[in-house]
Every structure is written in C-alpha cells, then in structure tokens.
Length: 277
Length: 222
Image (cartoon, rainbow over all chains, first blue to last red):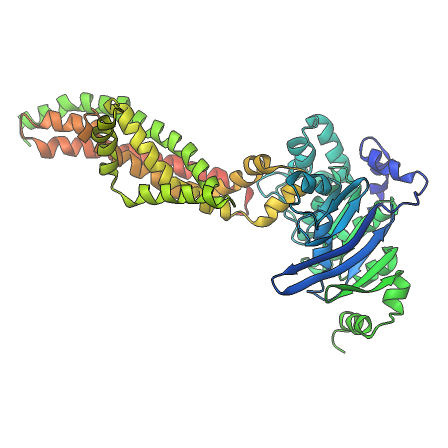
C-alpha cells in the first residue's frame, strides 16, 4: 500500500490532512472529564478523564466489559453518558445537563468519523456510494466533487478498483477499509475505531492495521479500541488500560504495555499475549 | 355447455373486462397506494418513543384488524350519512380499503423497519444523516426487501376484497357478473368468468412480485 501515500497529499483529500501539519497546538483536541454511565445497577463507567492531543493516537485496551467501547461511543454520543463532559475542538457536551438535545448530539457526532467492529456498511449501496453517503446524502455536497474525493480515499485504503462493487462482494478486510474511507469522507477532526479488527479472520487483520498506521503517520488524531497490542506498541502515543469502568493505567505504550505497574494490567496483557500459558 | 350459455359468456366477456379495468383495478391500486402511505405513517408512529403517539397507532391497527372489512365498508357508506358525511360508492370504497390496508401494512412495515440492524442507524448517523435521510436512504430500501413478500400478500388479498364493494353499489367485477347472471340464472358461467378474471389479475401481480424480489436481491450474495 505504498502508493497510497501520494493521494493523501493531492487534491481534496489532503485538505483535511494539511490542516493538521501546522504547528502542534498546545490545547488538546479532545478532553473528557468525569464521564460516568450505568446500565441499571451496573456501573460501566466511573468518572473517566483523559485528553487527546491533536495528531496523536490514543489506544484503549482492557478486558471485555471494562467500558472501553462505551468510552469510545460516548465521544460521539452513540452512548449518552449519565454524567461528564466531552469536548472535541470547540464543541462541548455536558451529559449531566438534561436533556441532551438532538442538535447537541448531532453537532458532537459531526466532529468525528467512526469505524465499527462489524463495519455496518450500507449493503444496498456500492462501495463508492457508501463513501459518498456522508458528503452527498447527508451534507448535500456536490456529487461529482465528492465522488472524485471518494475515489482518492478508496485509493488511499487500497481499494480504487472496487468502487462499483457491493459490500457483500468484498472480504472482511476490504469491507473494513471501505468503512475507514466512508468515515474519512466526512472530513472529521477525529477518527474513532471500535475494535476494527476483532471480527476479522487473522490473515485479514494486517491490511486494516496498515491503513490505520498510515493514517496515524499522516497526522490523523485517532482513538482506537483494540486488542492488537503490537499495533498499540508501534502506533500509540498514549495507552489507557481500563478495567471495571475505570482507567487503571495510562501512559506511553512502553509504560503501560511493557512495564505495567498494576497486577490487573499485567494479568490482562499476559492473558492476551500468552493465552495458552 | 349449451349454445345459449356460450353466447351469454361471450356477451359478458367485454363488460366484465371493462369492469375489471375501469373499476376493480383502479380501486385496488388507488387504495393500495394511499394505504401504503398511511401505513408508513402509522408504522413510524408505532415506533415512536412518545407513548401517546404510539398508542394512537396501536389502537388504530387494533380496530382495523379487529373488525370485519365488510362492516367497515357499511359504516362508511351506510353509517356515516347519519352523521352528515355522505360519500359516493367509489370514494367510500377507496376510503374503506385505504384504512384497511393502512392497518395491515403498518404492521408489515413496522416489522420490516425493525429488521434493519441498529448498526445501520448508527452508521448513518456517524456520517451525518438525520432521521428522515436515514429512513429514506438507508433503512427503507433495506426494509423493502423484507416487506415485499408480505405486502404482495396484502395487495393480492385487496384485489379480491374489492369484490365486497359490490355491496355498496360499486359496479366492479363481481357486481357486473351478478347483474349479467341475474336475469338468466346462469350464475355458474358468469361467476366462473369473474373468478378467472380475478385470478389473472393476481397472476400478473405475483409475477410483478417475483421481479421486484429479484431486483431487491441484487445486493446480497446469491
């Protein structure tokens, strides 16, 4: 996928990219404070705080049920937290203040693009139509311009020749890469990835991670929920280890993944790195 | 079959065909299209999170499904005039059948909408689509696949149910057959012709249904 670097710098797809090559701002792009959420009696999140610097990659790891997906889904209000403040760029939503209006949700959601575990591509639309769905159907941008941009994005994820295919005709890895292109097409400030490789056959995981690594290298701000520890080690600027609805450890990949301080993190990493042990 | 019966049938073929084309088919199509529009509205009301809205829809569906269609026709044509609302036979029939289709198809559409995975709504929302755009561009096209077979059932039932309109002076296919048969008592022959006409209309609709289903299947693996 080496050829994919060129299109990023060219034409429209690059506009979103070049903006982040300006001098790094001191302010975090994302800040989350006091995020809390319960389902009935079960507290899934208890006061989560973290910040994401522009152009950085934050990876959330932890056992299933630890709340990491709920944190991610709170960043675009797919999950409405009970309390806490989420700010992305200039947009801030205070979840403690009720009701959280539909407009607030929509504005917050528009700040990010999301890649789902099971892609959720639109099955009745072609690959190209999936990628232009955001700009054309939702944002009413010019169709031919959006299509040109979509072709660039498909080239970026290595699927230029699949524009006319339907999602069912693609492999799981290809579907996930279309999902990435679809999310990029709305020109978000932030990319959210919810276990993007967990539903894939092992041999297809690499092609998706390569694209994500590519995005990180081009300065995209990303928040990623994943079990791919090697990806986290290579790409993350910040790793949050979650368990039981709290952030148990945070730091660089080296700090959290190589030399974890807590027993919980050590056990978790041991389980996923040496499952037979 | 004697010569007189044969002649009677041949004489009736034209008028029965005319009744089919000018009354039975338009009555079916107009009622079905209006009924579908109503049904979509009722289905969305049923799915509303506002309790009062979904309750209204629930009561409506219950009334339509819980009372005989013939009675609904009678109430509209013979009953409403007592309250000062008077319809000609054809509009009365359209109204009754529309309300009826609206109730039955609403349940079909509601369950078809529910059959579209929640992830589709979420994905649409994350690329910036609002409720209406998501419904129109993402959910309904997929729901159509699920809804076409049961809606075709509703349509085919409706073709035959329009014969009930003969009881409120609508000169549709059955009524014309009755009128042609009455003077000669050749009920078997003329009702036979009417039955064939209904059947042919339904055959055509079944063929259309198959075509639609094929078209809908183009985006799922064979």
